[in-house]
Amino acid sequence: MHPNVYLKTFWNAERRPTVFVAMSFSPTYESRFKNVFAPAISSISVNDEWLKPVRVDESKSGDSILTEIVDGICHSALVLADVSTMGRDSKNGNPYRNGNVMYEVGIALACRQPSEVLMIRDDKDPFLFDVSSIPHMMIDFTDEESAVIQLQSSLQARIEETNIIRDARIKKIASQLGPAELRVLRLTKEQMVDGRGSLTTNDTAAYSRLVELGVFSLNLMEPFTATDNPNYVFTEFGIAVSEILFRARVL
Image (cartoon, rainbow, N blue to C red; front, side, top):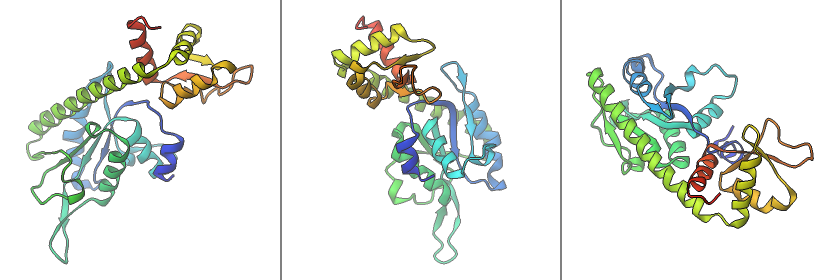
């Protein structure tokens, strides 16, 4: 599936306890995944869940690889990309990097916050002009123990920065809600069963705005109620918005 189609159709605000790893699948690079990437990622806990590294070559699903790439990039907690030099051009001698990885970096930078994308490399070759201004880090993979510590520290810092940005976004959305949206949130929170709340005709505009803001999403498992109205659920982001409003005694 084309990334643009996926983003418009299936993307939502939920985040899985995973880190999408974009790297070469050549056996030459397998040791850095097993001995550096995986241990560093697995040592981090987010919301009481340990993160897991995800690579598309390890997928067991039947989806197309492009769909799995975009899905992983969109819904993982972070994106980790190894953009190290792969070799030298036989014609001009210039260094080149993995084209597939750079493609995935492009998708990640288009749909994720800069703090949610970490690029790493082990070379001192001139970096690509298009991404040279984007922060990235150098890692010496010959010292695996130090590399794990360095990568774990950087990933943890990215998680904390992402949480700060997320908290700021939550507060911003909460402050922008009008009386109609607040009334829907209050009533829906009171009437929810297993996180589900149904739409009433008078609340159509308010629900539509809350869906647009990412507070609600359509319940795909049960899209309509018994009265044939759309059936919505709070997103993870929406739960955070309602909780901050509840603590502020707005709901």
